[in-house]
Structure formats: C-alpha cells, structure tokens
Image (cartoon, rainbow, N blue to C red; front, side, top):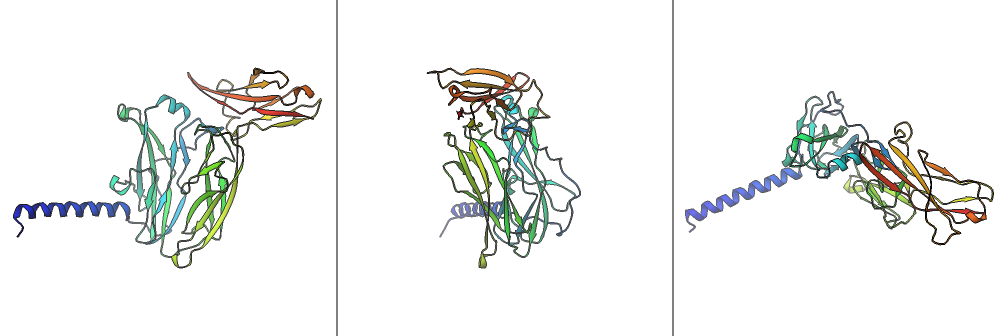
Length: 370
C-alpha cells in the first residue's frame, strides 16, 4: 500500500503534468471569440508605421519588410495557419543601437472596436502568430515590434507597428483558381550584406477568400534561396549572376480532394552594374541596377553621393582611377576607341546622416568596344 507521503508527491506530479499539458494544448490551439463575418473594423489600436524608405535595399527608415497579409481566410477546425512578419530598423538605427534586440507584442480585437494584448502563453510574444478557429467569424490582429535592450529598457524603446490584418474563419473550404506572384524588388545584389541581398515574394490568390496555403520554391537554388513559408528571397554571396524563378504553390485545404495551383515570377541577381558594349567613337552608359525609386525626390546632395571608378585594360596591374563624385546613378564614358576595349568600371555609393556613414560598392563591369 502506498503511504501518504508518496501519494501526495504523486498527486503533485500528476497535477503539474496536467497543468503543463493543458498549457501546451492552449498554446498550440488558439481559440478566440470572433465578430460575425462582414463586421467592419472601426478602431485601430495604433497607426501602422509607414513603409520603409529604401535605396538599393539600404533602409533609411524603420518599417516592415514583410507585413501581415491584409486578410487571412481559414477553415474552422482546419490546420493552423501562421501570420508571418519581418520588421527591421534603418541602417542608422542599427548603427546607433547595435545592442538593441527585437521584442514582439501582438494585439487582437474580436469585435472591431476594442483591443487587448495577446498574452505570452497564447503566442503573443512571438514574431509569427499561429492562428486557427473553432467557430465562424472575424478577428483582427496587429503586431508591435519593439527594439530595446535590458540596459536602457523603456528609455530608448523603438516601436514599429504592423498593418492590421483581418482573419476570417469560414465553415467551408474555398479553393483558388489562380495565383499571381510579385516581388518587392526584381533585382538583388550578390553580396554578403542582408540589407542589399534580400527581398520578399508575395502571392495573391483568386478568389481572394481561398482557404488554402502557399509554399515557396525556386528553380535555381544555387543563385537564390527562398524561405518556403515566408517567401524571403536571399541572393547568393559568391558573385554568381543570372535570373531565377520564384514559384508559389497553392495547396487547397480540402483533404479529400487537394487542389494545387502554381504561380511564378522572376528575380535578377547581380553586382549592381551590367557589362556594356559600344562602337568605336561612341559612348557607353553604366547604370546602377536595383531599387532606386527613393533616390530622386528624397535624398539631397548632402546625404548621398556616387563615386565612379575605372581601370584600363591596356595597362598591366592598372590601379583604379576616380572619375568623379556625383549624385547621378549612371556614368557615361567619353567617346571610346579600341584601346578602351575590356576597360572596367564600378561605383561606390556613400550615404551619410549626421556623423554616420555607410557605403556600397558594386562589381566591376566590363566595356566591350566593337
């Protein structure tokens, strides 16, 4: 017969085991009350942080590289979906707060009016939020990504607020008929700096209320890698150049008759400049590739400059020559001769903000003269 001491210990072990198991179940099966389908969101918790300003994928302001989708459609009592996000700080914030780390706080509204913080035991302190549903309805979520460290704490906390996402729980599965794929940038640099060699792919399904899931892949894994869940594309850092397909595969949520639909797009990987060809007596123009949309109209002459360099092929062990510093994103040669065949050109982009500075140097591009 078991004595009272052993029985008490066994009871405590059983109790704690039950509590631990219960916590695990709750953590992995998030059940939330929901507003009726068709309810409109009336109040934001926080205004979303504006989209980051970028130049050649160098971040000038904080923001999200990967926002939550505007709407997620899930089937009641189906497999869990995940809201994926990726926030980052500007290059200037990184330099000024090198010891700061990201912390995550999710908030939800189940009536479109009031918001509450999702507790840690319900995955509220995670970067990516797993969601499922046991009843039909609509719920809204927003993420506050905070950067701080335990030395300065609240004194220098940076808040980056995501867009609000709407989660619709449907009683029936709905399949997609087509998938359209886009990328934030169609050109990424093959250098080992995450600020320049990363972009994201996005899938838009038709109809938009399809309840299936998207997985990502590529046909050229030597040139790029792509996260199968988030669509994060990373270029190789070995100097390899070329084009790669970005493939989105939609899989339906109906187990009895799984439907798959595929969509594609393409990205180019390079070092920033393309080789050029010119005729004798003509000129050639070397132009910076990549995301340059935020250059004009935002940067002033004191914030950014481009230094252009050349090396002559006819001179053995030729040293690079500074051709000039400008704010132009291109360089046009003087009229060329056969002696200029195989000359090389590159650019160094210098960005400044106060006393802080960052630089990006392109590949050497070759001039062919015919």
